[in-house]
Image (cartoon, rainbow, N blue to C red):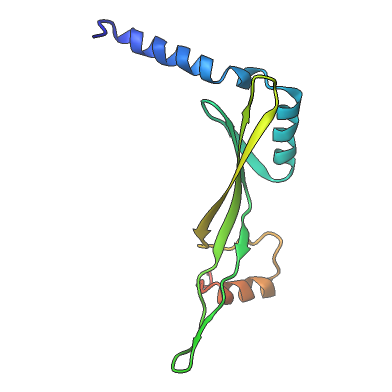
Length: 132
């Protein structure tokens, strides 16, 4: 059993330093990859053992309407799709990239880059209420 409360903090800090030592001085390839992702609209954050880069603006995937003979066609919620890259570096400095896709129901549509007409179409197609 540990007798000093500071011992736990020292152990955690030493483990953190070992697990993420390459984060303090990444290879040129890893640094360039993270920089390129930031230029492409990703927000990057370091974790204990990797760098995670999440796409800032999602791609809005429209879902097909569900149509029946009795009820007509009903709009379905759209889906926000964001790419997430987890970057780790091996002992030789070569970055390893794990790509995953984050999918969430669309709750709002960004106004930037869309005309009023496009916004109205997307709100209707994605079954979203108009914002006042």
